[in-house]
Image (cartoon, rainbow, N blue to C red):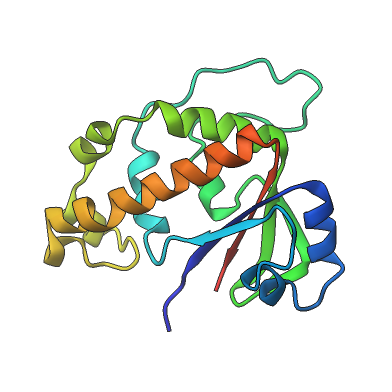
Length: 176
């Protein structure tokens, strides 16, 4: 069984609808939550987080009055780390995490600032496999794993977070 990273952008009403629905994943998949958009990036999450964590941290911004604390890397937000654990939204690999509108805005701005060439320069298949970065295909696939797998999934994430930030939405992170 493989672990698939899934992201949904949705407004506060949609998030509340999910919290009230024991079949929330099915509701998202059937698009019955208005203004919600769900994507998955297959098994690319850990590889993308590994690469992003090696990039310069985003500049510190004024977050006065916001409970969100900037980390040295925002990359773990892709795992839901730093978000709110949603105990009522249990997925295959534990509860979903919701990212606040502010977290989404900060993360999206950082993602938009990343040049794919920066990521490609840090792509190191041997080290990724040695560090057991899931799904451990990096040495076998070589640069194709970056060009044909990690980069397209990263660009999908960039686009989703950009749409969420522009619409002032939350992002729900869960694994199936």
